Length: 130
Image 1 (cartoon, helix red, strand yellow):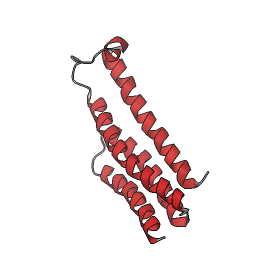
Image 2: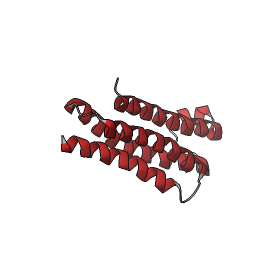
Image 3: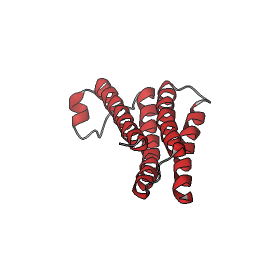
Image 4: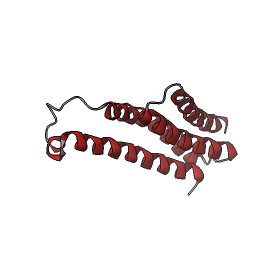
């Protein structure tokens, strides 16, 4: 399997970890029965859960774009040093972004976001240039 596809799988697993962390916090806060029910009248989520909800939405948006460019690159047979580096940058930047986002550390979070975004754009650029 190519490095780019491996980074896509790793990124998907990171997304799963974020979702499971959010679900685990919800169960801890509200109980399993409440979370398994309709969830109509649950209390306001904790600050950490709210951050993880925003992180989940952000990761979902970025993972869709990343998956598209990686899969198009693979289908087009585009794999080179730039696409390998860009896919790796995306994954590691998203790991750092998730940690920084979850802990609420300000100012540095956008840096990791834009590094991941650069990875997406760099792969797309390689596909369009081929």
